[in-house]
Image (cartoon, rainbow, N blue to C red; front, side, top):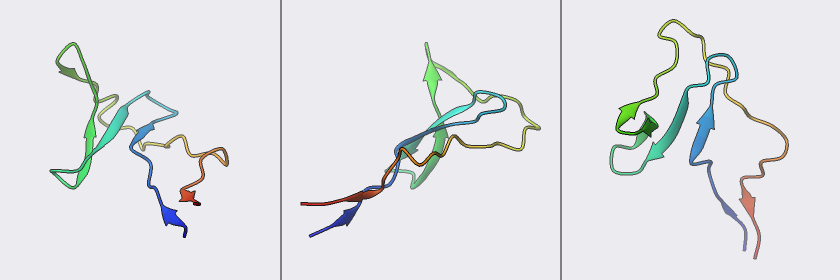
Length: 60
C-alpha cells in the first residue's frame, strides 16, 4: 500500500526563511534559532525549495 508523506520543512530560495509544519496549529510556522523566529524578509514573495528529489509517495 502506498501513502502520501507531505514535507515537514521548507526554505525560501530568495530570503532564506525556514518554516516547519506544525501539526497542532495545522499550518506552517517560522523555524526558531535560539528562540528567535527566522521570518526572512517581510516583503519577499517566497520561492520554496521544491525539487524533484522529494517524493511524497511512500511504498510498502
